[in-house]
Length: 223
Image (cartoon, rainbow, N blue to C red; front, side):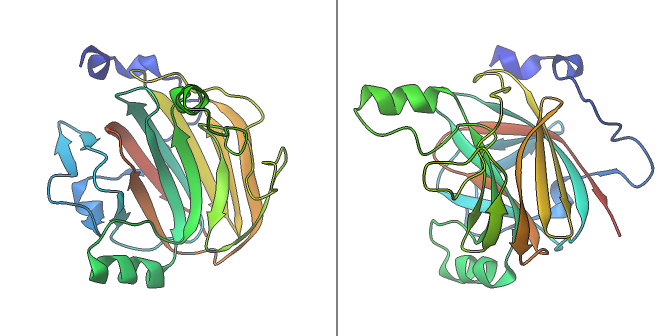
């Protein structure tokens, strides 16, 4: 795919993730949960995900307070994925033991291509309950989302839709501190939530039906 050859300058990193305490996340920092053997593969520093089955790849160790940088690119229109923050060990253990498709409990930072909205429109399905890229919402845990909110009040919708469409790289900066998660998309803060319980757990990357690539995964753990 030509887009995968985009230069590093294609994404504007607004934060200095080369400062003290920052480190790269590589293959050795992640471990299998409930994906297939070929769901995730590393190639020249880029993590490729087939999207099948619906599953996650988790960090080997849980984290509490942290900053994280994730660059991602959907390969197809309407692609679906996400980053799970503070996923619970119990839900991870359950998924691992079952070895079947499914997602854990935690805070999902949505990575959804804009084409997903158009796809649902064309099928006559509702599309007001999600905001494509930039939604932050709890899955089986507690969180008070920042406005603007989804119609049912469960999601923090992005104040702006700043992500580029499929075939282009995007930059997420995620900060989780003392039970609060905030998200910046391509350099601008857009969404988040507070009062999160639990406020510690694994970080996961999500496989959800469509191929996606990740690169420049960086983290800094905080006191």
